[in-house]
Image (cartoon, rainbow, N blue to C red; front, side, top):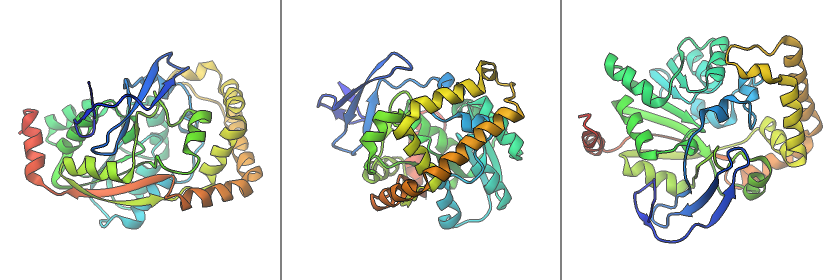
Length: 331
């Protein structure tokens, strides 16, 4: 018997896809829940070393190569109805969103379990950036009676082992009339199956959930939230990165690994100015040479409903929230 992690409904059909991960040596199976429309992989086991080891583009976080606000968090500054408040950014990575929100007047705290990314966020000027898992941070906040007006989790939902535990932890950290904001990849975007085969970004052990608008609404409604969903329109930097993965992703990753070298595996290691300049030059060369094709790919993604979904919402049913927390003994 397989239970849907989104709605706890028994999925009686067999898996619809199988995947073997070369990085972990594990086999995974994909299931579809006809009740809530969620697609999910089994088994789901997060490996923190996967994120700290400069795989799948995380060297851009660790080496401070990203400079502009990620496209999936830009809608927050267009659509979110409030301009201040206590904000917790979960899985904030290198701190680009947290820094922008801090500059806009929000009182920002950022957490991520990847120590290298948190180190980059601090260098950017994020005053309260900490290396915590969400579970560890909940315990810290309960001891201090600390809650937040807004909790953001951009490109985080698809990584979770346990959705129920994740959303309950989010509830515990929210004030009674609090807001959630975030984003997750659109599973029905154009070329999704091709990119999954080529770059490994949207498969286990990186992503465990494939979301649609329907499955997002169903999941959050079941936990007392009403959300609005907007397309997060991809930018040229991201589309040219996608194209490079199509063309020679494995070769480029090996070159980057050689430039970074093995001694950067330690959390306190520095990459060095020369190597940082080489990596930055590679990024700008990619953007320059692939710009025309990247522009066409951006148009295609936008026409297919957006590369990612941006969502924001607030607690719609306080009684449901309280009931779910009392089950955990937190009331």
